[in-house]
Structure formats: C-alpha cells, structure tokens
Amino acid sequence: MKDDVPDQTPLPAARQNWMRVLARAGKALQRHEPLLRGQAHRYVRPAQTGMIMVRARAGGNGAPFNLGEMTVTRCVVQLDDGTTGYSYVAGRVKAHAELAALADACLQGPDANYWMRTVIRPLQALQNDEQAKRARDTVSTRVDFSTLVRGEA
Image 1 (cartoon, rainbow, N blue to C red):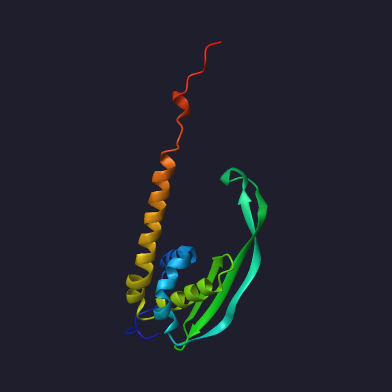
Image 2 (image 1 turned 90 degrees about the horizontal axis):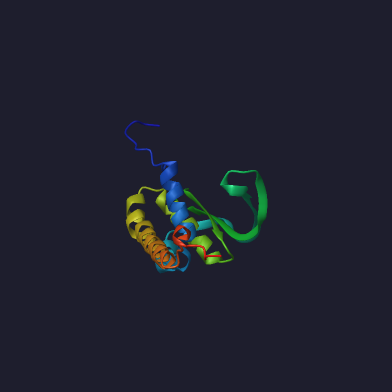
C-alpha cells in the first residue's frame, strides 16, 4: 500500500460499537432508510431468518450451558465500490437487517464521518436516553433489604 493513501480499515472497537448500535436500532433505523437505500448496492446474501443457540454461564463465569435458541436475521450487502457490509439482528425483521448491513458498508468507506454523524450518533443518543429512562423507572422499584427489620417473635 502506498504511504500517501490513508488506511480506511475501521478499528475493531469502533466497528463493534456501530454494529451494536445498528443491531439494537430497531424501528429507529427506518428514518434513515431513504438515505441508506439510495446507495448503489447488491445483495451478496439477502436477508435470511434463522435460529442460533444462545450460550450462557452460571453466575456469569461458571461452566457454559445452552440457554436456548433465538431467532436472528442476517444480511450481507456490497456497495458498488466493493465495500461489504454485514448485519445480524435479533428477530425476523428483514428490513432492519438490510438497513444495518447497508449502514455497516457505508461506515467503512471514505465518508465514514458523515455516516457516524448522520446515523450512528443520533441512534446511539436515542438508545442512551432509553437506557437512562429504564434505569430511572427501575430505581423507583428498588428494595433495600438491609433496612428491613424482622418482626418480633
């Protein structure tokens, strides 16, 4: 590779972050649909729904066990410049998988900063707000067992 050509490969942590945001976006990703579908692309693997085995560990660090199966939808797209985007999303919503794969491909290209500003940051802010709301709603139901006093016998 020439020294004067910048490497467009995203850092693994950055890509993991945007893949997480896209996978959790759900219906919020639909507002970006015209922009994403406007990118010239082809389907390498059209959206397909299947099942995966979810593994867990007892106590978070114990022996692994099969928790059960869940439905996922995957999709692989390729932009006209050859960039390939992937997605795996929970559930059966094929449009969500297609849009997430398109966004992944766009985020790997030379306009990555534009896509981060336009798609990922707004989605991430929305997800952070929803998480904070859930935390506020949950804290009101918290019980402090150390303050409970046993009844006298």
